[in-house]
Structure formats: C-alpha cells, structure tokens
Length: 388
Ligand SMILES: [Ca+2]
Ligand SMILES: [Ca+2]
Ligand SMILES: [Ca+2]
Image (tube, rainbow, N blue to C red; front, side):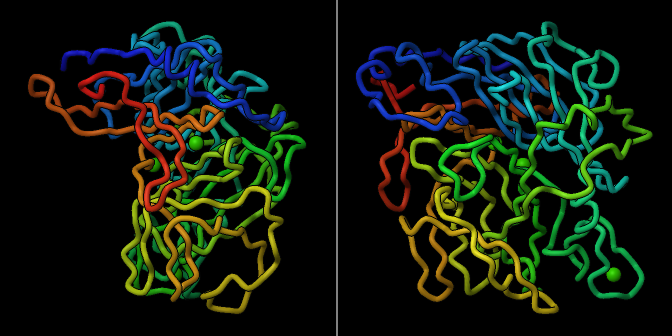
C-alpha cells in the first residue's frame, strides 16, 4: 500500500479567499468558510480507474466511483466503507443535496440495460457492503438510452453490439457516464433536474456523432421506479422518456462526457472528456455550456436524415476554433470533477499502481479555484511550500 499522503487543510485560504456570491436554491450548499483539504487521497482498489467523485462538505464525506465499487471516505481520506459487487460499469456520480443520496450512471451493455444507481450513502459504514444484498443501492432504468444504444442505424437488421466500429448506435451512443444535478437548461433557479450525459463511441468515419447528448430527468416521482438491482436479472423499471433531450456540438469525443458538473459560480455546465480524434475539430478536453442560455431548436448536424433537436450553447470563452465554431478549454477533469461553490472545485486524478503484485487503481482529488484564464481556467490551491 502506498503511504497515505499528507492531508493539508486549507483553512486560512478558504476563509480569506472565498468571495461572497449568491447561488441558486438548487445549488450545492457552499462550503463553510472553514476547512477544505487541499488534497484528499481516495485509496487504491482492485478495480478499474476512478470514474467520478462527489463531496459532501457539510457532513464531511467524499464518495468515489471506482467503476466496480463505491468508496466512502472522510475528508482526510480515512475509509468509512465500500459498496462492492458491481458487475457493470459505475461511472460519474453526484450527491443530491435534497435527499442526501448519491446518484451514478450504471451500465450493463451486454444486457442492454442502463441505470441511474441510487446509493443511500448515510448507511455506508463498513468495508465490503454488497450492492445487491445490503439494501444500500436501488436502480432506475433509462429506456431512452437503450433505444439509442441499440439503434440499427444502417438498417441491416443487425445490431452490432458494444463496438465503436459500426454505423449503429444513434448519435454514436455507447451508454451513459456524466451525471449532475442542477437547474433546467436556460433556468436560473427552479426545481433541480438530474442531467445524464451519453457516452459516445470514438469513430472518425461517421458524421452523426459530433454532439454531446444530455438527458434531463425530474426525479421527483422516481420512488415509484426505484428497485434493488439483481444484476443477473436486470429490471426495466424506469421512465420511458426523459423530460428533455439536448445536444451540444463539440465534435466527436472518446466516450462522450466523462464528468458532467453544474457550476453554480460560473453558471456553466462543465463537460470533461477524453479528447476526440477527428481531424477538422479542435478536440478540446473540456467544454462549458452556458447554463443560462435557453436551448434553441435547430438542426442536429450530421445525421443520416435531417433532424432537429434542442441545441445547447457553448460558453464563448476560452479557446475557439473558427472552422467549427467550437469553444473549449484544456484541463483534466475526466476522472472526477466536483464544483463546491464560490469558484472552488475538487478535481480527480487516477492511475494504476502495483500493490505487492496486486494491480490496483488509486484516486485522489485536489482543490482548485476558478481563474477564467485561457486555455486552462482553473488553478490549483497549493498552500504549502511543496505544493501538496
Ligand atoms: Ca446494423
Ligand atoms: Ca468515465
Ligand atoms: Ca458529476
């Protein structure tokens, strides 16, 4: 096991530097101007890499999605418990500040089943809790994702399955990953929505996969859908359609929005991606959608048959590519990105480690603040001479 890194408390900086700024009622509560660790180590686990992080600054817990496992730590990195036994792909996660539970995207591509998993995180109190049998997790199935994932786009009567090398999958949908709570697009307040972003396969030979796709759900009535999940007999309990479906023209990326996050400070929806590979696009690693801009109906360019949809507006700041009209930034947020309010963020890193012959992945988060500078609009909050 690697030595746990020192946790530095940013008490002084947090109390001095946090500017006063109002946030919408739907936003995360702003951190008390007291203690925000500049760094939290999330441990090393025998899983795939870190997929997402969400932090409850009020109660003092961090939640880490390690693909097959949800980990709960305190803000010093002490492990409180784990939820294990996930055989699918747990992606990005977000804390619902209204019900205190953590929501995450959960995929079973072979079964053509896609869920929002809901974790009753207050009850996670020991390592090795089971996702199916310990009553911690329910799941709500998203039919809309199945329809787009399984679409036989070339009309040959064959769905080619979980592969990028095909014309199938509407919009290039590979499933879902980025999730975040926030206001409806174009709304400055109002009831919070759960936004769910598609994964999009990397494929440079088709033109219908150049948008990020975001589904909007009102989870107010989701209690009627929530069921525990038996993974070898996946249920289909969930809403038939989302409340809204939105498209952001960024150019094709590799697996779509990895981390989606509403930022109450900048009023942006932040999309962190694995950069795309298409020639003719700038292939930025981060995009910001103007949360206050009303979505406009327009053509979803590049589709096999002309199609219109609700288009999102990229914030006209940062880097700009005149050829495509795409705005973006350069930053790493693909393994976890949490907006804390007041222009502060936790941003994750993840890497493989060898733990005495056992391959593991470790994850950690560091505190950043907004600068708005191009090409990278965040700077790390480093409070000690060694920058930890
Ligand atoms: Ca086909
Ligand atoms: Ca991911
Ligand atoms: Ca998120």
